[in-house]
Amino acid sequence: MYTAASFLAGLVFGVGLIVAGMANPAKVIGFLDLAGAWDPSLALVMAGAIAVGAGAFALMRKKTRTILGAPVRLPTGRDIDRRLVLGSLVFGVGWGLAGICPGPALVLAGYGAIKGLVFLAAMLAGSALFQFLESRNRKPRAGE
Image 1: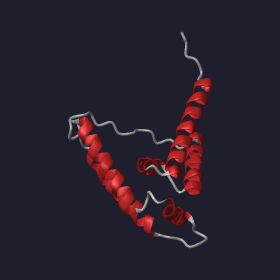
Image 2: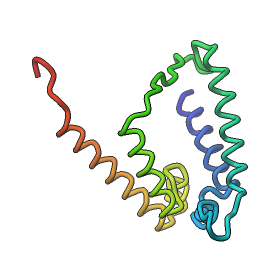
Image 3: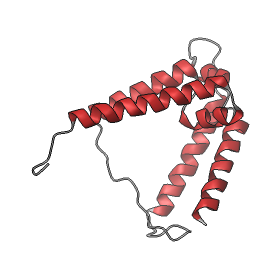
Image 4: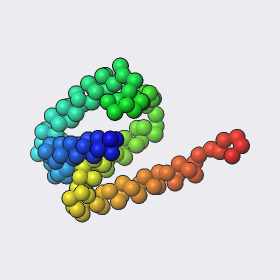
């Protein structure tokens, strides 16, 4: 049941990205180009996504189980620290340069688009580098 629900959710998400133009790097870069020929259409997509997400989070705060019976585990962290800000900056710069973020990268890779495959490979390499650096910087606990 979880696999089918996950597949359906991913399918709806992917189709939504395509319909909204979020899988088109040129459209995304047009949205981010505030000094040039700015395309505000993706602002409406983002506003709609924020509204749906805010409603879903508000609804799920009152629940203890999902529709499929899994426990509800909402994020509790509220700290804005250096790591969060730097990570957000890296994400934003990558999004601005490529016009792609992780969700659309998967859609583009599914198309077989070279730009999506390259972005996905770079994203995975960046994740692996982060994990490597984290493991080197992790302080050993007592008894390790």
